[in-house]
Image 1 (cartoon, rainbow, N blue to C red):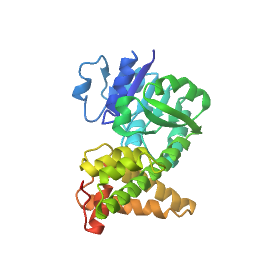
Image 2 (cartoon, rainbow, N blue to C red; image 1 turned 180 degrees about the vertical axis):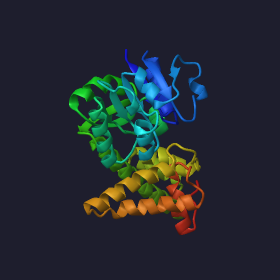
Image 3 (cartoon, rainbow, N blue to C red; image 1 turned 135 degrees about the vertical axis):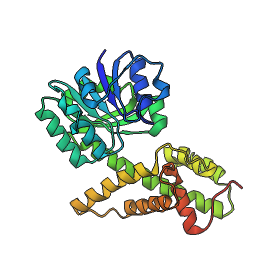
Length: 295
């Protein structure tokens, strides 16, 4: 068993910690929002800072909203980097900038530690079911060392390449997800406006080449109007910003990604920053002045 530190006990982090605890690992945790009530009955140690977590753990996992949050937890006052990191492993499972990730990895290595970027896909459902897809960047030997731990939280675990490559894969994933949500939204909007029952159309499409997890899960949310996250629009906006900023730096054109971001922007303008990202359908409905509904 391993002594594991876990920083960030939000919608994703809390169920991930439960899986580690249920596998009898020793957990040292820290979260700016405090210990969630659902973890109150578990045997774990609550720490006051990232430094305190890192002093006691052999591996430190972070699951945080954005690049500045990871920066602050790792390198800010009383951060992870103030502990002796010799031989310890930092595993960042947040979705953040690939460019900054490479810098973070270099700084941790200079302090004697090791670094993996291991962002996830699958949302709260995947976190609860321990079925997350995990995209890993970092040294092969460190990946192999941490693989048994990652397997407690996910199913499809792939070492993509070196540090930063895991985050690059996650950005690509978020592009595909956003564009698929947009496609499903357009299709159901079209079907409903044409007079068909969008739920029955969704069922029919699930049996053909158009089938996807997005159509299955998010299509149902669109029809049933259940937009509680899930995965908040604000977080998906952050991920698409990473794609668009990197594309600008590389001289790439990502027109469909830019469109998806604008649709998310429209949702935010309607007060939907905290809506599930399947609520992109609301922006499409607003453009057409028509709302889908079961017939």
